[in-house]
Image 1 (cartoon, rainbow, N blue to C red):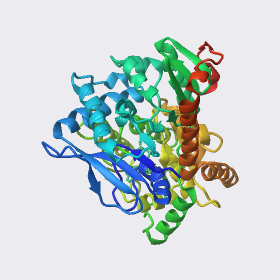
Image 2: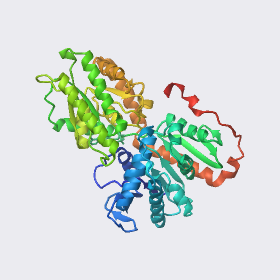
Image 3: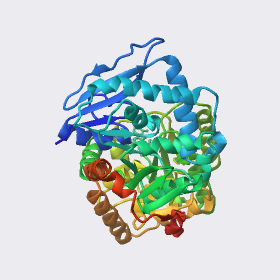
Image 4: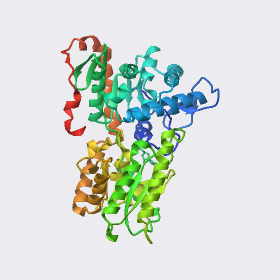
Length: 478
Ligand code: ADP
């Protein structure tokens, strides 16, 4: 088996995995070994070399970033330009000069330092929006290995892509990959549409286009979790956790405090629910865990202030002796404790405005007791909704009445319906777990690379027709 080399912004520390990307990839790396390369914040003048990091089962190398690189590449271009753009928040774009140049320079430096560590037979898998130009930089250095990319965020609509002043170079970065992996079929449709809107694109198949003389292959590979492992952790956790004192039904939200997660929207929806259901027996205690993230970026401070103000407002309006409607915990909580809380919860309220997948939704389903499962109330804009639409209660996070209606439906759902919905979702989680995600992506990458190397010329002679909008294939889901 070829050695797998993963590239991502951060390299996992030794110990239990945290964060969606690491959770999904670590078991693959634990099983097959390989090399994981990433960056880390460094000093004023960090060494121009990769540093080995401690870890069992696979090798790890990191490139320390200078303070200026961290500012302009990580906080600046990746998190203040690409992140909002990828989530369709072009109103938040901060396109200051110089940041894009640093972003590309960091990718080129990483390619240069990684090059001597690569073998001819390696398979390279690059992850997420921090490193989109890395394949182009490696190809410039003569790397001909199979190189795949996986985008963990949503792929945006064509209009958002065009809000970048260099949208053509953004699209061109993808052309250096043998296979671009996205979370959902809706993302694939948007990806193809972005190229079509940029002009001169021809559809070769539903997963392959020719654009400005480049052949680009794409597919959807929904990221999964180890559902049985998470269920076991949740069962262990409730044995050791102190149960909550509240006698009310428990509703939970767990997210990084990010403006894409729609946390203020969920509080407005809960406020509407409480206004519409004043009876004591309808009371629900809502626990929102939202640890700080990227606090150096202005838009994150704004959402924090909004959340604090809203939770104070809801508590002021509805608290009673023995009843506090909203408990807001602004810090990271251990993964096992989260699994226990998810298991205890009667409802999970997950309302992103736009989300690549949302693993918390899957973790909630995995954590449930199959005999008495809780109900997942899920935004239709989470990637997870594409797989879980049959079992979750889908809502529109922009409409407080829709959120409130979802909460009401979940709170009143009979146990028979809860069991049936849970079983359906759990089956899907088991069929498409984290190992399945990595295996199916890597198989498709190897097949794409074989086509590129052996058959590129003849592929170009195929029957190319003018490209119609791929969005037409997903009329109900957009
Ligand atoms: P994102 O990758 O955008 O943060 P996901 O829901 O896809 O969102 O993945 C988040 C991962 O981080 C999940 O595995 C979740 O359990 C974990 N996580 C989220 N919030 C917290 C928290 N408050 N404390 C600890 N882990 C968290």
